[in-house]
Length: 205
Image (cartoon, rainbow, N blue to C red):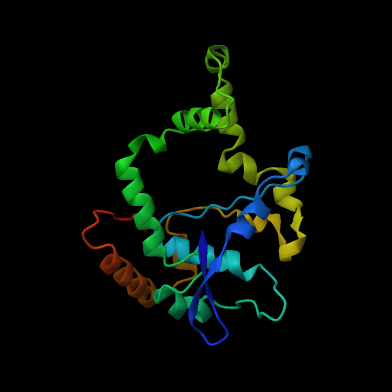
């Protein structure tokens, strides 16, 4: 697994993310009340861009000046220079997978497959008693966002509150941060990159 980062000379570099991924897996203490971190943004180019900005600006890293305006990183995002690669590459991968595996959108199906993979399949009794539905509710965005640890907790190693990992996820919220010309520019780039894929987005209510 790799991550695109920007080197000191301004070039995009690939970094090995295996160690970071392993470090992020839940350890035993995570199941004993310590916070687990989740982030969700609206899945369209403009709202994703705004969510990414608000997410990134909350992190405090040594010798790195936090973004103060969305204008500062806009040109780089238009060039596809951002953490985990260009927006269009990411969504195109998910789009193709959704066409190949339409059942992945069924949360009940996905939870059953995950349980089987872990070697702990749900019993017939658990399914009839609604255990799968209860798990899906516990893992829902609204439930996680409203947990006390995510409303008031702090992610010390990143210097950001846990609430950073959650936003209101309202389609069209981008208009509060992006100018019409910025929106038009980015949408045009995304449309060119996704041409022929059949993928389109709802950018307003």
